Length: 573
Image (tube, rainbow, N blue to C red):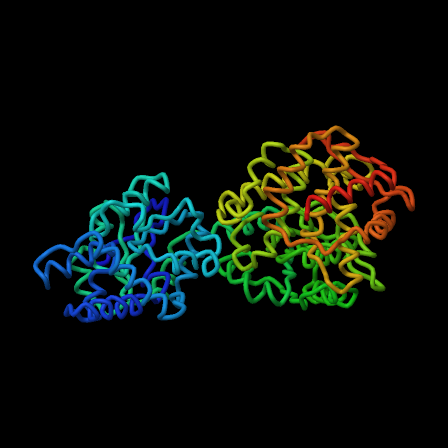
């Protein structure tokens, strides 16, 4: 009864219980226990059949059957609250095996996902962002609170298609309940049934499921063969254009384990040579570069070879440096897997390694042939890693694109929406590439990229000296507030811009820097020693006249810097 997969799928409408979470046994026990407390006869198993219905509709169904009447509104409210309490007491619900693979396949094919659940269970819905980061932006969710008629009525899936902005016949529904399948079919969607519960296959056949799978893993594996992997395809196309004699991949152990599976379908990387280096700044050294050089030598690399760096800033820096120096320069492609790497380290052509305890002490300017920007690898990052990279996006927007800056102010909303985040990342890269093209070796215009960094590096260095490291992006986020204040004092930036940044971005999102008024003199001293200063001992800033209008080589006095730091401390208290 399986039907061929439709040619045009533009959105995936995905149920929650029994599809994303192995939660239905907990729901069934909670329903059964709640009804038992009321002296109403049920079995746990029957509630699998009612999955997809709203809570009040389920209560009405049981009351009509057992008591010969509908429940009152107060009864429905009280009984559903009791059922919810019992469900929460059942403990943490486990993500369904295979669900992450399914979501990844949709994401790699650039197919939007909409959550469509009959549940209003906030304890589970709120877990989506941590268990499946970036899979379901808040604007792409349909719950029991959003519909008048739950499943098996088609309304939930019709609303899901509406949120995705596509007609129902161009969507795919993923369900594990017969009533959900009935709702999907009634809405006109291509409907997949996955039998993750005790309900026999025949029940799904009766409802007209277009395809039936026995587990989420089985469905995910099948899906991976049917959907395109646009990330792997983009990399294949970029490598193919270079017609390389050999291909060498450089990555680190964490990325090799967590992210490299995204490239399993890549044709060009299938037989590539691979170098896997240990993660961490301690390994951004000459030994790691030597390992890459040896691998290139063993592979018979020539000037026509290509190095593909897949990883964060450490990997793109060190892989780019190895490519820059082997045979006086090989071509390379960067595939950043962190937000910070995507908008900062992977573009611009700065490569390097640490030496004698100094960061990037040895390096070279060597531009990549291409940078593959995608939000897909970011799903493996923690929230703290994402906001660190986000600070570089804010910086890029502030120096070059006021409209982009305004669009980035709601940090959590942008981070939760992979499509929106990826578009913003690409715009940031466009800005940086344009700046670098005009000033490849940082003689003039490229200095605008230092906005937030003179003060930010001082915050970072102070934290390191106290053995309380501050992530680079977090330090830059605080540095930007200091430099926005200086911009107001010296360049006429409107004070409203300072308060907008402090109150809408910095304070709600970023950890506080452990700085007091007693640290002011030391911070000024650290700014004076920043490596980007043109004259030793004289802090050099990029400031703003307004968002998108920067000015380089600004040299405030120590008194003016001290005043800015005092205002910063007042605002952060």
